[in-house]
Length: 206
Ligand code: IMP
Image (cartoon, rainbow, N blue to C red; front, side, top):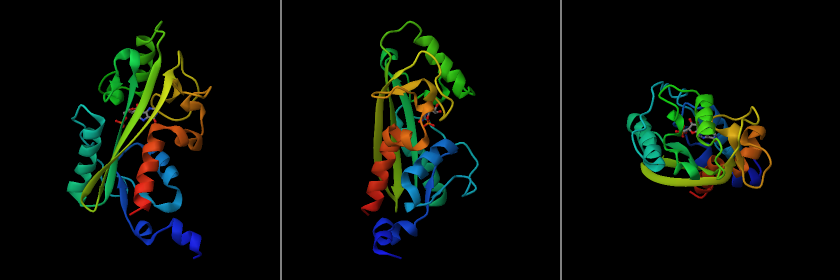
């Protein structure tokens, strides 16, 4: 091992098991991509957890905390969870914490997108932001990291990549939607990418 490897891969990180408490493979892929090979994340599947984790709260922070605590209480393992919301100015911050189920309990990503497009039909102010809060439980202590990105809601789907509201979200300073970006490009500027970067910086400084 050369010195660079040692600096980039502290023993602490290489020996650590860190669970990302999510069932969303896109999110897992995005955060693993942000971490690179510094640390291999375990998914819920990897620890044989196949239940839905409750999200009962009205804020992203409390929901992220609830998800991380749910896994920590069961397995006593280092873990983190995220909660994300799309906050649209002219809808007074909706769908916000209800982003996943905006069009109803078992709705699809496309159902949610169509609901937003309908509500913004003819609306001029299309400003919005994505916000992510990550809750980490490391050696029994809790930490929080937040990331956000400003943008606007398009008038129709653009692109087929990503997930969720990606086809209708165009970040400020770009002329394409998140769904038209590769993973690396999205990660550099996205809400989750920014929160994940703070998580990585924190872990590397332990
Ligand atoms: P969650 O509660 O953190 O899983 O996120 C709530 C919902 O927000 C998801 O079901 C997606 O519809 C949406 N969402 C979360 N992250 C993203 C993203 O990076 N792009 C687009 N939509 C997202």
